[in-house]
Amino acid sequence: MAQGMDVVVVGSCNTDLISYVERMPMPGETLSGKRFETGFGGKGANQCVMAAKLGARTAMVGKVGEDIFGKDTIANFKSLGVDTTFLTTTPERATGCAPITVNDNGQNSIIVILGANELLSEADVQAAKDMITSAKVVVCQHEVPIETTVAALRLAAASGVISIFNPAPAQPPLPTEAYTLPSVFCVNETEAQLFTGVEVTDTATAEAAGGKLMAMGCKSVLLTLGEKGVMFIRPGQAPLVVPTVKVKAIDTSGAGDSYIGALAFFLSNGSLEWEEALRRANVIAAESVKSHGTQSSYKARSDLPEELFSKM
Image (cartoon, rainbow, N blue to C red):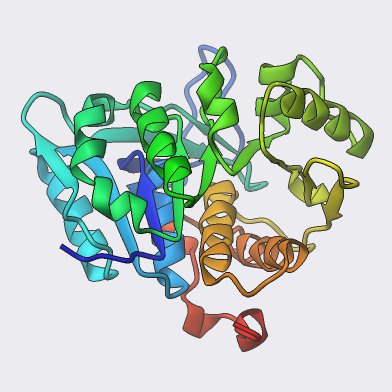
């Protein structure tokens, strides 16, 4: 078993079923689509693949079905050099899937069917204990049982490992430890509103929502604000706002996961200040919306400006 991973992701693996249309259908309406594609997805898998494409030593702790989607998912990880020791299969559920609709403006709507992801257990996390506690960064999301996620965050916190928790899809309320254990609690505007009741429309309301999350016990809060960039809130310091890069969006599917995977990569290096790590992750996420697909839109290190990897 590989030890000393840069990034270990505990979370979901799905197959994306992507339909491209001119506009989103109205309720009860049938539209003719432009084309259909399948791809690899799941928030956990996306974040893991992004980190791997940037050069991190990565491992995936997850569960897929004993079906063709599961087999292809494992093969995809292996082709990217991701350790799959603790990516297990189950005959009890199908591999998770996500039907996605993308319109001409690059906006998307997504339905997630969790499938085998729902069977990823605390026992699976304990099996991967040595890998999790020896990692530099652990990343979790909310597409597997929250008890499983908390078990992973608990191991990371006890071992002094940096952890990022992205509680998406947002399903409040969360147990207290889901707020207090992770090093970084990362949400977008919609998720922040669901957890705090504050509608996030600008930096002032983002700061208010972040303040509420800090009061709930978070060690730090990272709010991703779309075209406005990101806001990072830590105790005793003024909120840090890092603007995004302006690009023409073709497909925003997986952009948030690209950001988190890139941030995990930069944090695992340990040589960058927070502001610079956040800025570089912004640039990489912006690159992902310039082409269609989810993981397929994530650029490898060799296809990105070398300046993004300077002083590392």
